[in-house]
Image 1 (spheres, rainbow, N blue to C red):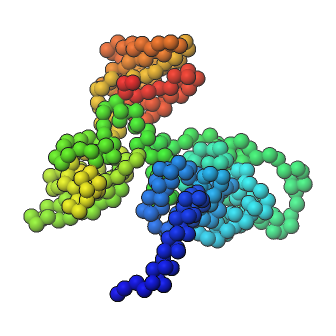
Image 2 (image 1 turned 135 degrees about the vertical axis):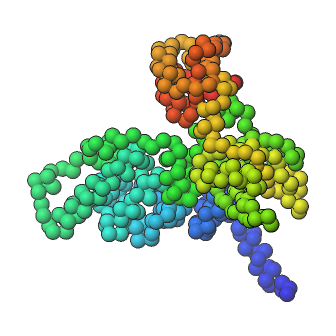
Image 3 (image 1 turned 30 degrees about the vertical axis):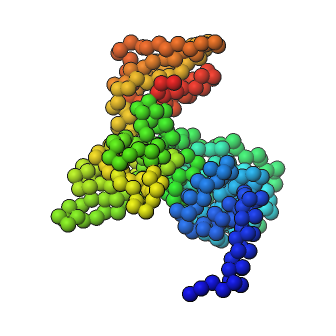
Length: 414
C-alpha cells in the first residue's frame, strides 16, 4: 500500500489549514476539537488539560451561556451542554431556544416555568444542577436539588394554566423579580447548605464523568504541602525503586489473577495536574481492596516502577508499585506535623473564633500562628494542649473566620 501524490497533497493541505487555525484562532480551534470528540471522555479531559496549558479558560456549563456544543466566549471556551450525562438533544434545544427567545433564566422556578418539562425532565434538571450548569442562579447545588420537586411542580402548574387560558389576579400583576435564593421562591429548601467539597465533586463527576470546576484534592493542597507529599508529575523525576508518598484518586481499576491464583490490580491514578498507573501486587491488594472500591482521595506509599521499554527515561507512563494506601482524610488528621495559620496581627478579633475552631477539631497536630505585621512576620506556638486534626472542614472554618484579615490561612510552613 502506498500513498499516491494526490492523496499526500490533500493530507498536506488539510494539515496546513489545521495548523493555521490552531495558531491564529486557538480558542475556536480547541472548542471545535473538543466538540469533535465530545463522546470520548478521555479525549475531552486531555483537550481541557491542553487548554489549561495554553492559558485558555474552559468555563463550566451554564444554562444561561452554554450552547449544545463547546463554544467561544471572548477568550474562553464554554462547556457544551451535550457534554453532560443524561442531557439529550431535545432538552438542550428547548433550553437554548427559550433562552434566545425570552432572555436568560433568572432562577430555577423561572427555568421550570418557561421550558417544556416533557423535554427538559426532572432527571435532566438534576444532572444540570450536579454539573454546575445552574450555579449562575447563585444558590448552593444542594439547595437546588432539595427544591427541585417544588420547582417542577410549580412549573407544571404554570404551564397548565397557560395552556388552559386561565388567568388570575396574580397573573395580571407585573411579574415579580426573581428571588435572590436562586430557587425563585422562599422555602425551607432554599436554606439547605452546600454539600461538602468531596460530595460536591463526586456529584459533578457523576454528571460530567470527570472533575471540572475543582478537584477533590484541592481541599487538601495545603495539607499536602505540610506533609511533604509529592505530586505525580514530580515522581517522574525519580529513579526506579525510589520510595515516594503521593495523594491521588483512583480513576480506573482492572483486576488480574496471578499464576498462583492471587488477585492483584492495575489502577489509573490522577492528582490535580498529572496521572499515572498504580500496581497493587497481591499483598498490597489484599490490604487495600476495600479502599479501591471507594471514590475517595488516597495517601499512597509506593516505589517507582520500571519505565516503558520504548519510552525515553522519565517520559513513559508513570508506574507506582504500591506498598500501602490509606484514606487521605484519615491520614491527614492523624499526622502530627504542626499546622500553621496566618493571622493579620493588626486584626486580632478573629482569635476567639479560631480558639473555638481548634477545640471543635481536636487531633495530634500542634498549632502555630504566623502573625503578619506590616513590615515583618513572627511565628508563635500555642500551648501543647491546643492540638488539632486538620480536614477540609477545619480549613473551611479557619478561612471563613479569617476572611476579612487579608492574611489568608495557610497550611504548612512558608
